[in-house]
Length: 406
Image (cartoon, rainbow, N blue to C red; front, side, top):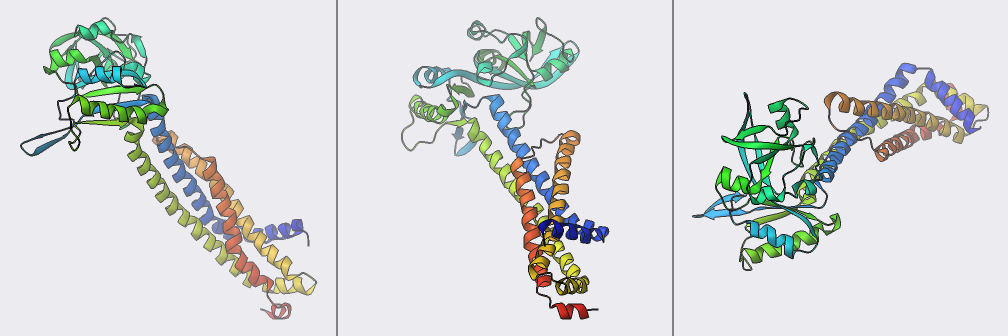
């Protein structure tokens, strides 16, 4: 018997009881759709992390203040006051592979313009910061080296701060705002950047010269961080290692002393989140895979019932010349049709759910072609695996006994 004829008979047999056929496929449909949706959520989260790394600069290195201990009390990372502008200068001049360097000092303050006010982060930084972050201005310009050396009271606003104080889309260049009761002239507005690598809103920030924060807002001499850009992404590990070695010399640390600073690349900062995302994706995909297993068992159960119901039909076919191999192929084809059709519907449903999640819940999703192929392939394997035993049982029926079956 030809394969086409076997396929035709199999499809006709499945069409006799459409409700049962649909319910049998439902397990696979749900399983395949769940796998694709869960993997899409995980892939979307992973892609979001990678986009954040790219937007921040894949060759960025962050140097931050380390731990400070007093009287046996450890105050935690960021509490040390040993980072200085000399450290930033030494990194620029002595570490090979460094492209840009920007010292940083931060403070949170209330910002006032007219009758509007807003509590935001004031980030003191250097002129090369927007070059490190690939972050252009929307209006005006970033401050100049002369502003840093003179500790000028100039400010570049993030888009959210601008929208809150002046109105959405307004060009505030030339206006004066007050930070801790001190007047600052607005010289620029940064373009929209979005969330940072740890979820913080980068647009809710005001940028001013770090020397201005030191002298006029905080009254300190040290800095809190140094942002460095390597000449290429492939040099980040080498440059970060050289920075660590240099700062140990700068801070007179001897072997065995704990670092009073912390050097991390952006990839390292994102590794924990990426690993957690991968683990969660695998967990969700495994849970969804259980649905595929349940769907396969459903196919096997229905095919066994079908063999029992069609015992006389099988005996009649074998009595008129059909071989056991023909019967085997017929039931195997029916199982594969169930699984492949259920898989195709599940793929369409999974893609639709992923797009719906992105559109209505605004969660990033990425439908991976590999996930689609794996899900469809698993559906096909499910049909073969769970359909083989019922098909083999049908093929081994005795024609005489089958004809006598009531």
